[in-house]
Length: 300
Image 1 (tube, helix red, strand yellow):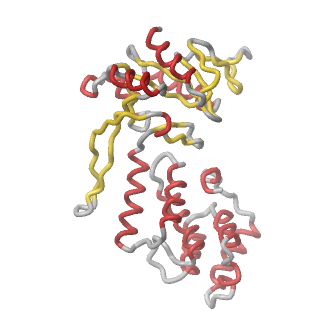
Image 2 (cartoon, rainbow, N blue to C red):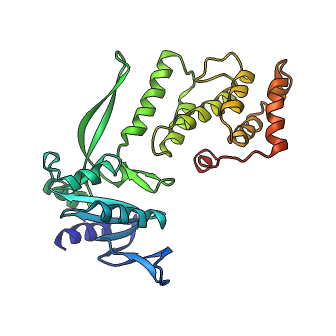
């Protein structure tokens, strides 16, 4: 309880946190038991941060896998972020359940130490260590290396992924994609300015793991935006779109919208080789092919 009080009292002094509570139930708005009673969980601490709710759990004892995933599932279904804190824990002392929390928290562990407590008191803002896996790209061998790193951070340094209801300081899977994009850009395989690169990274940040299907769609969208083929070894947009409509069934609507948004419709329809693409577009429109919506929240 004393450890809870330190975090609770500090959060109450920060204007960004509202409704800070300790050891109180959160009742689900969407989940019920078989008898109709609303499901509930009692986090160590809970608070509203900006436009989100966060449940804080302090890891002090062994955590069973089933209990961990039950909590995670409960909070995510109600749109609540879950954050685990450790106290005075060295990476070398990670127990099996600590490792489970680390790997399922985007390979981040948040640790309160005497040092961070003193800094928190000094600046009247919660500071904590983040242990994380840092991804480094070896350009010579075209491979990724993982380095164990740590840094004192605050909530200002965290990324909140609204799609997955997860927060993290560093996500090595996302960093791999960023490094791959930047490496391709340096080699000239992808040519676009910083603004476009930031847009691509923003989209990728919203998705949990590297997904080749998502990346293909992103590349087609930005090809249409820049009127230049990106990420594919094709000579023109007609060839790229033919490829997309053939191999990426279910994503025709997304690309059709991109064609109109970026004003490429007239240019594409007047292209000498448009007839082959027109057949695929007509098939999509006439047959009302079922669309895959798994990336809609990310792309739109």
